[in-house]
Image (cartoon, rainbow, N blue to C red; front, side, top):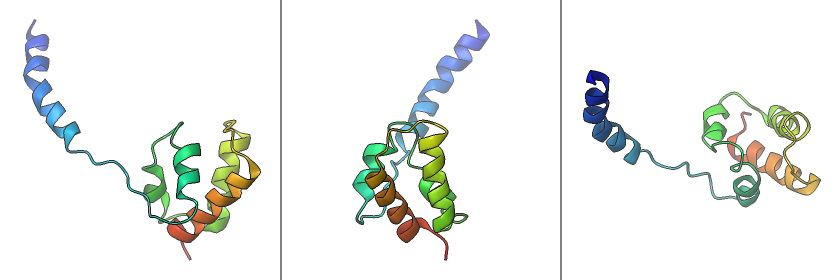
Length: 94
């Protein structure tokens, strides 16, 4: 009973914290729509800016290839190229 009361009292604070979370806004550039339509169905787009300090163009290519081959993401070759180009240009390291 005590745990239930604590959870009931904590719920408004948890909801308030969630309400303040902002959705990820990717950079507006060619290829963004391919990311939003192909990638967001399986995982959060938060991974893109979160990983961007560590990935160069080759590593972004490897990530997209991994999503297709290892995880079975249904991404066409043309879309994969557009996604890698977008990631490398907008979120890649030099």
